Image 1 (cartoon, rainbow, N blue to C red):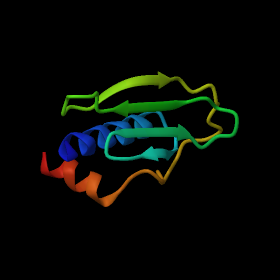
Image 2 (spheres, rainbow, N blue to C red):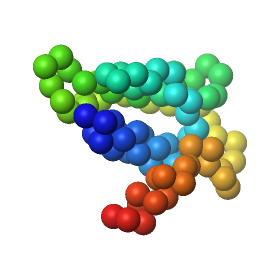
Image 3 (cartoon, one colour):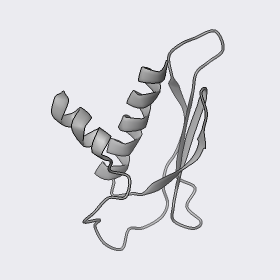
Length: 90
C-alpha cells in the first residue's frame, strides 16, 4: 500500500509540474492524500484514498485550477530528489 501511495504522490507531482502549478499537501495519512493549489482563491485540488477492504489507491476528486499563472516556473517547489531518482531509474 505504501508503494502505491508513493506512485500516487509522484503522479500528482508530475501533473503539477506539467501544468506549471504548485501545490501543498493538505492531508497525508496512511489512507488519504489531498493536495491543494497554493494560489489564494484557487479551488484546484486532488484527493486520493484507499477504499475500505482494498490495498490500491484511487483518485476520487480532481478539481481544476482557475488561477492564471503569471510566468513559467524556473524552479518547481514540488520537485524532489526522490522523484528525479525514480524518473531516472525507470
